[in-house]
Length: 606
Image (cartoon, rainbow, N blue to C red; front, side):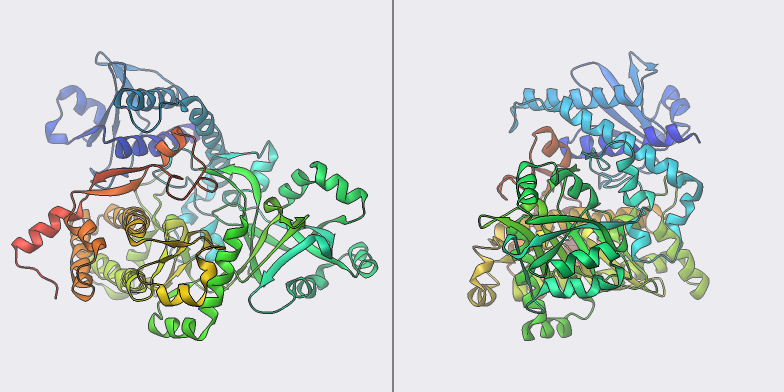
């Protein structure tokens, strides 16, 4: 298979899956329903057929399986048909037709936006398309490595080849040019050092949960790596502090007028590259090394997927107070109560400050670094992704390894593995939600699954940007730390938290995992969804009369974050008010009919 064919198929698959699911368009045509012309085209595989409004064109693509969860795997590039004849269109032309169709739908249905951002989204899609091409150039020769049974944290962070499966521009990075894209991309397995500024202490601010002087701690850890010049500068400027920056960000900020002013005033000196060689993780702007004492989450003035990735002061406070909670006696009790769920905390942050104002573009957040190369841990997005060229995934490799060790039946392995996952990760998330008011936007990229003997053993949750506290259940915590409400801005009402839980943990996290397990062929979507429904019914027995279970089990529709529609409306998730930072749509709830059937069959899961 040619690289261009793979690139076209994957880039269009993400866009079209998002289009169909968010707008509820398209239909599946099973093999038994296809006429002779369709059978010849599909090679006796199910077809996805999508109208391209306002034209009379149809888009058709063979898929491996029909799915009710939105993410289907294309078996080849989509083809556009006009009057029954196929059109020889490029991938960019097909993308243009899809985006034109979405714009037409929005205008004709009087949805939230009347602004046509399709040209802007097309530009982002083309950037993402080119980025995917760079990744494939680097990785295709060894692409089977991404489905190996044993992979460590850094390896899996750099194995997310084509990104969020329901996002139209998963590899969009507006701001990186030419060789910068490959130089700083996780998928090209890059490594590089941070850049450091030496800044007069009046112009540096920060905080550290574990001590009083994060600047001295950072200097102590970096001392073995200093060049003679860097040592000399530090000795000559004892009232100055080190400030770490992403190397791209350092170059970008050194072109700003305020930097030139501080430089001329000798308040700031660029020291260049220093310290550990770090690997970019899935977010691009968070860097990690097994040798470093922390991970580094850095502001990066590059538009990655939905936002320019700048750390905000409120996020620093959010991480600081969350870390305080988990380091406290209360936090120790939580760890004992939930031994299979762990939080990766952000204990410190540093930034430049001018006239008392934190310069968000300079914020560096220091994140706990709990892993070593021997620990088998993976973000769920990498674990669940399809192999780009073969109908397999890493979960199937894990199942095969388990079978080699145990000789169990395929269906037993798949069912037991998913059941283990629900016990290890999902149940603790629900329990923390209701017993302590702790909520996490634990989407697949921010959820890390630790494996033991190829089975789930621990779920790690990261990224303080998505840590929240439910007002109705976290009263004692909010009373103890009122800054959660104002400084950190992370207290939300239950109805809002329920919507986010339904999307991040159910629709994104669990439905994505169910899709990946079903694609192994060792269990069906229906079987896995039934396992989830049974677990939800049991949890409702423990936490009765809660609106979340009403939403998940008895409502016909579920809220779903529309990444494509969010892009079409030009929203920035980091800067917009939390209530309006993303577009949410309603999608059919696959759990409700299974729940009704279980009730009719007398299943109560007490």
